[in-house]
Image 1 (cartoon, rainbow, N blue to C red):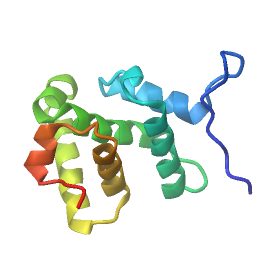
Image 2: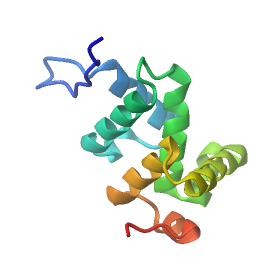
Image 3: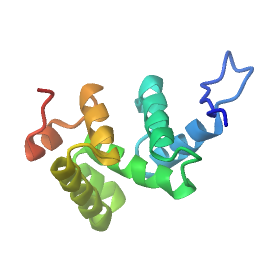
Image 4: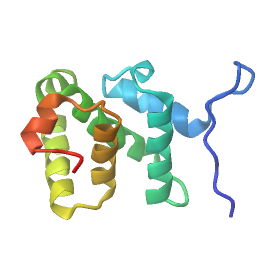
Length: 132
């Protein structure tokens, strides 16, 4: 089966692909405006999702990915103000688990955020992240 491709659209003539629209909606739901995220980063996220879920990412996956990504960008306090304590604790648990396992889907999202230089300095310091 051919892998479905993501599309940014072209000159307003062709629409964005469904996966990018779902990610944009999920980012809004996590209180991160999609316009603040470079298109290349969003394409990387949906490609990571396609690698993790080869058939099709489940619809709930966009929300969980957006929350982890938003936490990495906003930092703990700002994320909690917008998304609540439980979502903050969930994101922190996921980052801690990602650091323990080393190579997981969540670890790739955190690493991509770090390499894109979008990650909060507070998150970098809190978890001792680096690009060594």
